[in-house]
Length: 485
Image 1 (cartoon, rainbow, N blue to C red):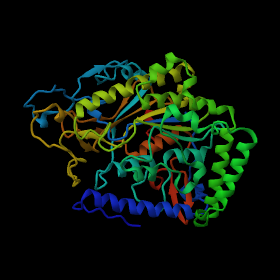
Image 2: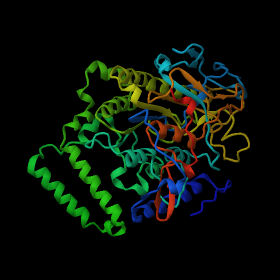
Image 3: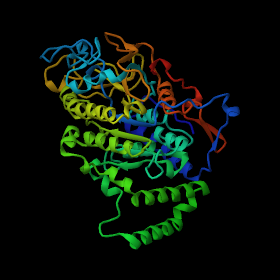
C-alpha cells in the first residue's frame, strides 16, 4: 500500500484518501493470522530491561497543546490592538515552579507545585508528514507508525497489553477514557488508532467516553442478575459465533474476539468493577478532580491503576476546532484548558504519591504537536496553512493566540515510573522559529523510553503475514537514558 501526498490536493481529498487506506488496513487486520513473536535472532541481540514502572497513565492533550502557552514559556506580550502577530510568542506570562529556576505558564499553578516530581522534555519533535492533519499525527504518536500501513498498527497501549499482559487478570490491560468514537468529527480517523490492530480484540481498549458513567459499563443491565445474566452471555456468544462477519476473520482473530468477550464477562462478575465507580470516592476528593470530563477521567484512572490496570489513556478529547485545537480564540481557549487540566493533574500526582504508587506508575502528558502564530509545520514545510482569520496585527481578542500547527519542538512531561525528579531535558530556541535546538527527542525515542520504563525492549517485534512489525519503527527507537533516575 503506497500513500502519496499531494500538497495541492484539498484537505477533504487528503482525508478521504487517508481513510480509504486505513479502512483497507483495518479489513486486512480482521483476516490476519496469529502474530508470531520475533526472537533475538530476527532482530539482533536484545533483552527486556528491568521495569521501573508497572503501569502507565497517558494524559493526552488532543488537538495540539501549544508549548509556549503551557510548559515552555517564551517572551510574553499582553494583548493590545496593533500588536504585530510576528512579535507574539507566549500569550501567558511565566510563573515559578517547585523547581528552582524552572518556569511554566500562568494558569497552571497546581502543576507548577508538583514539577519537582517531574521530568520535563522541552525538545520533543515530530516529522513533517506532508499534511499537518491531526488524524495523521495522532495516529503516528499513538502507534509509532506513519499512516497508512499495510497492516493495522496497534496502539501503544495494545503493545503493553500484548507483551506484558494484565497486572490483575480481571482488569482490562488497556483502558481509554474521555474520547467519544461516535458522533464527533474525524471519528473514523480516531477509531483507526484506538485499536489493538493485528493483535486482535482481546488486546484492544475498553472505551469509557464518560468517566461518570463508567460504572454502568461494567455492570449487567438493571434487574438482570444470576442465571439470566449467564444465559444472555451464552446466547450472545452463540450469536457472535454465527455472525456472517466471522467468515471474514482468521481463526486467530475469531478466537481473540471470543476471548475479549470472556474477559468482559469475567470483569462484570467481579468485585473489581467497583474501581470504575468514581461516586464511591469521598465528596472532598471528587471536588478536587471535578473540572469536567478530563478531571473526572483522571480520578477514574487513579482508581483503575490502583486495581491493576496496565495502561490507561485519559484525554481532554479531540474534537476539530475545540479544546486544544485553537484555530481561533487561542488565548481565551488556552485559559479554559489550563483550568480544566491544572487541578486534576496536580491531584493525580499527589494521590499516587500518597498511596506509594508514583514510583511505579509512569504518568505522561503529551500532545500530537505544538503551535505557533506564524509557522505551519516547521520552516521549509510545504504543508497547507490551516489557520483561520489570518492577520498581520491584532485588532480583536480572538486573534490573540497560537493558531498554527507546529512540529519543530514541543513539550512532554513525565512523572514517576523511574524518571528523574525536577529535571529538564532539551531546549527550544528563544525566538521564532521555536525549533528544538538541544537534545531533540523523536517519537520513536520517546516510545522507546516509555517502553523501557515498562520493561519492554524497544526491539520487541512480531511477524504478521510475513512482515516484521516492531514496537518502535524498524526497531530503531532508543530510550533516552538521561531521563531515568
